Image 1 (cartoon, rainbow, N blue to C red):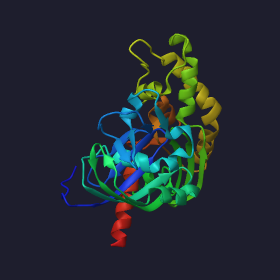
Image 2 (tube, one colour):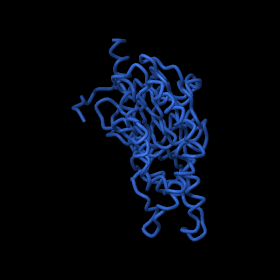
Image 3 (cartoon, rainbow, N blue to C red):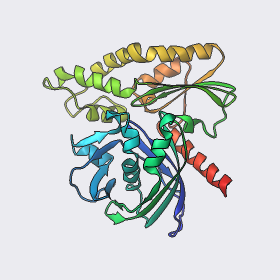
Length: 313
């Protein structure tokens, strides 16, 4: 973190309100990356705690830890827009307290057709209590861009490029020519589909009960298959990963390999790249996995915000 003046209020920022995790990167601060969970359970002023319009919420890890009293971005397509203000304030409530924040924001969205609704939800001036302390928060959305586009900002792009973004709710297929986007197709077959399948097929390991998707996600994000101290889902995971690939991903991966045959470089981003064993499969097929594939989009969104602020001043 750089030295920030106590009275500084205006901060460029990038916000990726993902199905699986929220990524907020405010200029001068470390990236906030937390699970996309919102809980209304009563708790103390933990990171992610927000009191807003008379209602208390907790966003992120603590919401996940409460158990079952949460809603998730991934539960509904609308949640990404409807919950955007709460998740953004919850992400801010993970950062050191400031009396005033004026965020100049670039946001990514799976469907840019919803950009005006998202701006309407986010833009404005608010007085939430963030992790126990009042803040004046002003939000100004500078731009809404398609998901994954941030990851390419500032990169040296090849003349012809196809990108697959393996997200939690969607797998995004995008093609670029000379840096201009030609195709942007979201397929509703993200990592959530895989996790749901694992939860159903691990009953024999879990005393006949379906697995908890949050716990499955947690262990996979940690890069292993230990569901609990007693249960390893390695075999179930391997079988489900194969099924998920064959049923849902093969079509879009084959489209990408056809693009490679036609001279495109092929890149992969998104948290799905880091699924145990999956990265190797992608690399074997000629994909370049971008550095920090989970947070690359947020870093690019911040750079976009900084460029727009600089241009405007």
